[in-house]
Length: 193
Image 1 (cartoon, one colour):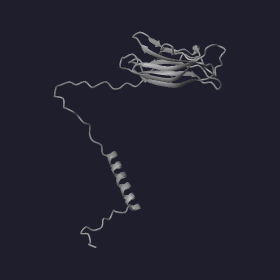
Image 2 (cartoon, helix red, strand yellow):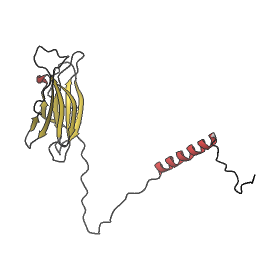
Image 3 (cartoon, rainbow, N blue to C red):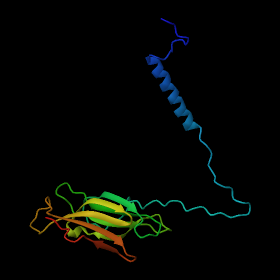
Image 4 (cartoon, rainbow, N blue to C red):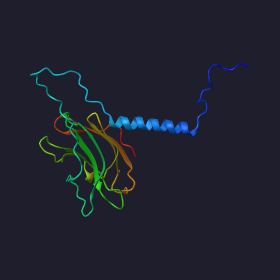
């Protein structure tokens, strides 16, 4: 048998010390990369005497915290069950759509859906539209805001004799802003029992 001219490789068998060394090296690189950060990148320098305008900062959507929803709950508190944000009216400022109901220990309290906005000179959000009124005894599921449209599935009742626990009518609904009000659309033959 002829001897190889190349010495045996030291790393042909992995040992625990190899894994420890590798983990230490990776941890060191990660730690160092979190400390050392590159400076801000600039595509081009503005010429002297040239005035540049910065893009407006992204506006935060209105918060539901502290909003006085027009919902009569008596001694129990108002619960924001779901919320979604998006620019519904195309003005560049996001609105918040909130699904709200009274906090009830028993039964299924009806939902309400409200649109919140904030004027440019105020930090206080306010309710500007009611999409679902709690008087309609509806429960909101499959809730979303996409491309300026609010979508939901509304669970309701075919008559007053149907108990609150068991809605028997399912209706998909969408709302969009037409420039002066939110218009609800429901696909034809969408009601199901």
